[in-house]
Length: 356
Image (cartoon, rainbow, N blue to C red; front, side, top):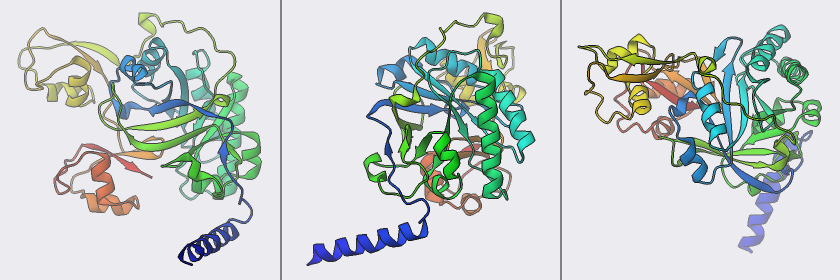
């Protein structure tokens, strides 16, 4: 009797849920067999050892290249180079900030110019998830303009990154029929079936935002992909010439009296970033004439985003409770995601990651 009541409740809940989303109530499942383990990364992960990543069983890595019309992720070139040289399959994504079709086309050209000559293995991904006061019609018009323009300029197929809510309530059926989806759903992907969405199938699923793997310090998003996300023909990878490598990457010779914190401020990065890049165990111990690798401009401001997250720079006077309320999350969620031991002790200028 108890089992019968349970299934009755599940049926009633499913009926109500599907009634609310009546226009989109369909099953979503993998396009084909889920066979590739993946991750997605940005400057947030800092210096990555892609050889260790590959040896851990990861096969595909999606890399953030850009945001808006002029921001290039400071680790894009290094991540692309490292992943390709490790033998990983590479995808690239762009975070949209456009608020009209003209801006969408500008962003499309910016993104296309960054990736069109690279050896990309996977469909190019559009990450559009912060909509402000845009209507659904405007979101879809901007998305369609961006997707069509990038495909026209690069000749490469596109995929849309979306969470479940927006896949059902924001992105249109028409867009879903034309472009595949890489869906965010944290948990067992088999449980995603029969959840309302405008897509019938997914080619990628981001199933965890707190993954840990060798080669990456801290959390990283974990993904599964089907073979449909891969291009059938991929240009040969040609290592870039020295002068074509990341313009943000420099070599700095330590001078007498220098400290890592002063150097970090000078080049708009962090002590942690410099220490990680150079294998420095004690950040308080550096020597005159020592040469340091530095990637400039990695001290990300509060407008820089990553798949499913915003990277927020703490301001003077901020508290975690205020930040949690602003982003509709909890103090515990922020603390766990950022390894914060004391929730009452945060520092202005520190960058934290917030799920959105």
